[in-house]
Length: 209
View 1 (cartoon, rainbow, N blue to C red):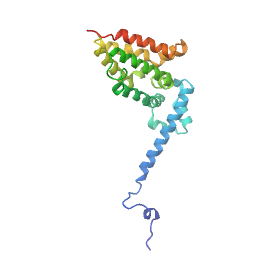
View 2: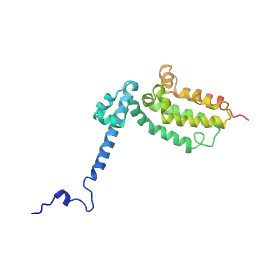
View 3: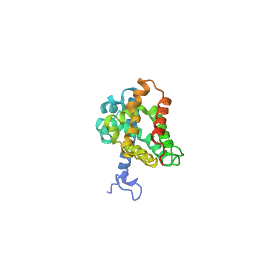
């Protein structure tokens, strides 16, 4: 007697057995990633992001450590993933946005606008920035590389001497640790910090003949 496999019988013509498995695995991975990022954002906002461990994130997200490590090697990499979306929006504005943040304005005005955008980003997402860019790790992020190219371009357009030596000097005030110190220990407002950086931009990038 011929035995019909009901699973095969109900399968659409031409379907490959097990073909839905990769889709299910991808969906599971996407759900786990969302849970991890949501849990991590809460942790980073609630305590010093530099003290958050992978175990803390795994427990808060309700996933195993092995699941977490498959996507993220360190807490900083989780913070970087969260911060990345906000930074990519700013990068797009620098490339294609309206002046003075985007192309079309004088270099000093563009640097001042960049400073204002960055201090706004730090004000809104400081826990993420602290978690993602602790110490020398900050200089190895893709975003920092993008900021370096942008500032170097403005320095060259303004005719500033020793442009390559000035890039990191101009980016140093945007260190998350320094912003935290000025904002929360010295008590400077974001507006005051921004005003001081805008003044710096115009002092350094005054266009030369």
